[in-house]
Length: 267
Image (cartoon, helix red, strand yellow):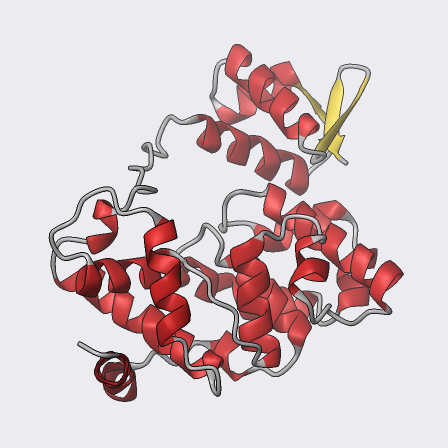
């Protein structure tokens, strides 16, 4: 399959089955940045429940930058990996201070923002500014493994990225990447996920009983109310004190919590 045939296959699927996601209809680079940080490690279905409400609460860069962290974490509830909420707030602060409130338009400047790696920076450029930068995310990975590495195992991203660059629609990268992502979602749903044959594939540990669950429970209690001791948190969450203590230390190391005497509160 040559580049033209491959593009037509992907775009043909998108014309018939493309998803109408709210962040695909915004021109504001700030709103694009918010959506891409939310989508880093969270399924689309969960982001749909939070995205528009988050923007209603923090409609622009300044409102997010000046908001208390507790308010940002409250609006982030349900998305998981809460350090991203703090990173996004720090992004807003940095953009205001260093870029006059405008989301940067270069890969280097975007990657200098807190919590923004290469893939997220490339997606912001493509979706906010129409800049064609090759990148890989989970659905795009599935497409290229399915079509170009049908019999291979442990396929590295370094083998995929040249193909992404070669087939990239440089005139309209926004539509092309949306089409790739939706087609990849389709491939993963209809049969064995091609992404499992990626060298980067890791099966996620169960959430129930995990330290992620403990951390989430701690944050919800502290966002919703006053500062508490480790003992109080153990009693109100139902988790053992030793696990609560480990969660508190980890959350503090990430800048989400601070300790005052025996009490813990949102930073």
